[in-house]
Image (cartoon, rainbow, N blue to C red; front, side):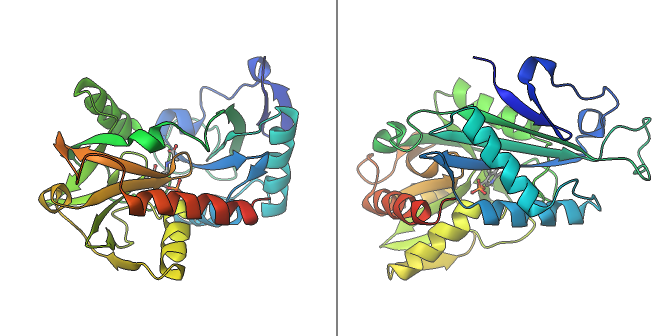
Length: 284
Ligand code: PDD
């Protein structure tokens, strides 16, 4: 079935949706994006994603073509017309189409695109009971990872390296310390303590991360925000990642070293449950 997508103010069948070859998203990766999950036809953490989008746009001196209310209405309309029960809404805003020039063009209308992806089984993802295998690779991305830009080639290369190594994903390492996963935030658990890198321009400020850490603290779990090495991670009791598309997902091995008993750990399993229960209460 053809999806209905949203492009620059119009709802269209996906085959009819077009953007210019001069779009700066295409020519310069001059654009930002957000991914919001849908469960039971409702959006999780929408306000957090809208807030981060506004920040990404502002860091790049880009204007939003829509207000937050309009953005919510578009998300809801796409979820409804495409009958998404479990899935994702992808949103991308670029600086728009202009003759190719490195300098930002003046008075160019931004391009906005939204589409849905149906993902039945997102909530009861079987991967959560098996856990992910990760490899470690050098973090060779640019240094403003706090801006959610569409420059996703290095994360794609990382996923391919993981696949080739028979793993599911890669953790990125800079100056000997893990920054984050290719498209998720990274955590280890040692002696009941949850350890994850602190916020800075080295990592994306995950919306799921913020919620999970809040819920963990509310459940009296100890959280330590600091960098950790791959060696420390290999000796952890357990590990996990968070993102809008995986929620909380256990990691069971790093560079082929099994963590703990090699099965998803209790902290990751509990946090996944808490995150889903609590986020669904405020889903809209
Ligand atoms: N990725 N770090 C990176 C590099 C990411 O790309 C993402 C999200 C996260 C987690 O952020 P959040 O919890 O707000 O989803 C961390 C999305 C899901 C993607 O690119 O598909």
